[in-house]
Image (cartoon, rainbow over the protein chains, first blue to last red):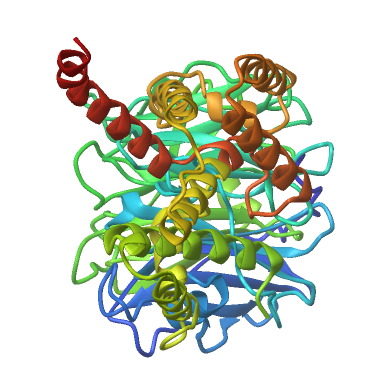
Length: 349
Length: 201
C-alpha cells in the first residue's frame, strides 16, 4: 500500500523522548504502534517478569499527539485469556504487531507458544472495529504445515492493492526465513510468498513505494559479516529478488523502516555488528541504494544509559501530520518513544 | 463462544485420543458391552474440559488440526477395536502409507525453508496442485485403493466447507503425525518381510 499523504509538520525542529508507562512488568519488549482516530497513537508491547515467563501479557497504552502523553498501560491480552479463546494450552506470549486491514479495522497480531521455545510459535489475530476500545476473540493463523509452529511476526502489516492484508512473518523452526502472508478479510491466510530461505534471515520489514514496488529488510542471524539483508519486488510482491546483504551492520537484531511521505526512506537499526548498544537512524534518498547515518538514538556519550545497555526492536512510523515516531526496547525494562518532525530531520547532517 | 472451526479441530483431536486409548488398552479383547462402556468413559474424559481445557484441546495445542488421513486412520482404529473387524485392508493401507510418505518427503523439507520453492504455498488453490491431487485420486480409483479416494474426497469437502482455521488444502490432506505414522508403518513392514518370505517359502 502506498504511504498515506501527510501534511507538513511544523517548521520548528522538534525532537522529544519519553519512556512509556510501566508499573508492573520487570521486562518489556517488542513495541508496535498505529495511529488511531482523535489524534492518538495506540501502542502494544509484551511484558512480564522475564521474556517467556507465564505472566507475560500484551500491554497497551494510548498517546495523545496533541498533549504528548501516554495513558497508563493496561493488559490487552493475557496468556489465560488467549488460552480460553483459542482452546489450546498457551505457555507464553510474544511479539505483538498492529496494523490496519483494507476495511480500516485495527488488527492486532500476536505470537503465542504452546510447547517449547520460540520455534514453537504460532500467530494469532484480534480485530477491533472501534479503534482499539474492544477486540474480537483471537483466532489462530495457519501458516505452516508442520504442526503450524515456528511462525512469528515483527514487521508492519500492509494492504495489497487487491484489498488482501499482507503480514510479514518469519519462521524459526529448523530454518530461519522470511515470508509475506496474504490474509482475507476474515483473517485467514490465503497465500504466501517466500522472501528468503535457509537459516539466516528473519523478521522481515516491508516498505512499499507504490502498488508495484517495495523493498524489504531482514535481520541476519548467519555467519559474519553481519549485515542487514535486503530484498526487492517490482511486481506487487508476486516475485522477490534473492536476498542480498547490505552495507549496514546487523547484530542479529530487529529493524524498523518507513518511507516518509515524499521520501526519504528511514531505517532504525542497531549500527553495530556484535551488540545492541547503538541504536541509530539511517536515511536513504534513493530507496535503499545508498544510506547515510542521520542520528544516534542510543549509544552516544550524551545519552543516559539503561541498566542493561540494550536498545532494540525499533518500530518506526509516520503520523498523518508528518511527525515520525520511533518506539523501541530500552534496556529491556521500558519502552522508549522518540518523536521528531521533518524540520528536525532536515537539520541533520 | 466456540467457533465451528474450533469444534471441528477439537473433534479431530478427540477422535485421535480415543483411537490411542482404544489401541493402547487393546479394547477388542474386552466383552462387547465393556468396549462401548470404556469408549464412552474415554470420550467423556477426552472431550469434557477440566480447568478450562479438555484433553482434546491439549492434544490440539501440540498437533494443530488433524488431516483427513489421520482422522480416517483414527476412525478405522476405533472401529476395529470396537467391532473386532478390520476396516482398512493391508493393500489399501500400504498404498496410503507410501503416498503419505512421498507427500511428506515432498512437502515438509521445502516448507520448512530448505529452498526458495515452497510446496505448501501450492495448497492455496493452485491449479497445478488440485490437478495433481485429482490425478492421484483417479489413479487410486483405478488401482482400487479406495481408502485414498475416500481421504482425498473427505479432505476436499472439508476444505471447501472451511472446516478448519486453515485455508490450505495440504492441511486437510496430510499432517506430520500421520506422515510419521506412515513411515513407521512402512519401516515396520520392511522388518517383517524377511520372516514372511521365509514362511511362505
